Amino acid sequence: MSLDCFRSLCDKMETSYGLQPTLIVSIEESVAMFLRICGHNEVQRDVGLRFGRTQETVNRKFFEVLRATKLLTCDYIKTPTRQELRRIPEKLQMDRRYWPYFSGFVGAIDGVHVCVKVKPELQGMYWNRHDRTSFNIMAICDINMLFTYVWNGAPGSCHDTAVLTMAQDNDYEFPLPLRDKYYVVDSGYPNKQSFLAPYRSSRNGVVMYHMSQFYNGPPPRNKQELFNRCHASLRSVIERTFGVWKKKWRILSDFPRYDIDVKKRVVMATMGLHNFIRISNYFDEDFVEVMGDTNINNVNSENDLDDMESDGIPDGNHMANIRENIADMLWANQNTFH
Image (cartoon, rainbow, N blue to C red; front, side, top):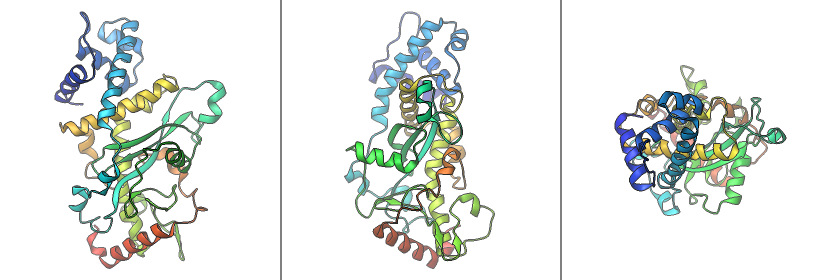
């Protein structure tokens, strides 16, 4: 993060979230050590050498900042109410590629894997198809690349659809939109009420749905492929959001050093910091790099194998009709999308 953003964060930690300096360690140093651990996945011993502190001091300050960041996260990741989900995002209305076609869009959902250290007896549960132990974390983001909801810590062996079912069944605050609103999702999810997925197949065979299949390739051949291209471009906001988040916080992707409970707390802390940086509106090169790029594909590549697994789940009639209507409008105005 920029120096101005760092200073703002330190001030916020002290004035709003109870982080206190000591005679020998300032707020700024405590936060800097925490960011060094999370941003670079450095071991606490090396951080201690870098700052001239004992490993015990680094460990203590890490957990002090982690506790304060948990409080910050509660303020910066807020589950939208149903009333808030009625609102049409201004940024959506201003983008002629998506408006008025995707007028019911309220966000994008996807899962992302985060490596974690687990006990041997739990490895089977957390082992994913990329031969490592991980969480499968489901998140919702809005069109501004802000996390709005997180289901944190499903075992890595769980498919995306299973994680979504867990969240809906076990969290009464899950932000389910009204009938004509929806989240855009990839083909690993069913096309059902409140969740708009791409077409999976047509009479002519498999239909393209990844941006990489359209990028520098032939134009869409039919309304299904045009819909999938526009849908994938809009849905790329969640992949770009995950991409920025993982790029900033190497503790999420590199060798896991913390157990399940601590890693869950780190996941939420870094997501809260992601939103803090975005909302603070200071210049940030990671966000700038991906802001206008809707051709990013496979940012969340660990879940690519999940695609197409839900083929056996029938499409909901209501969402199928919405998808058909959008596809018809796009095909009738196909010069709109560039």
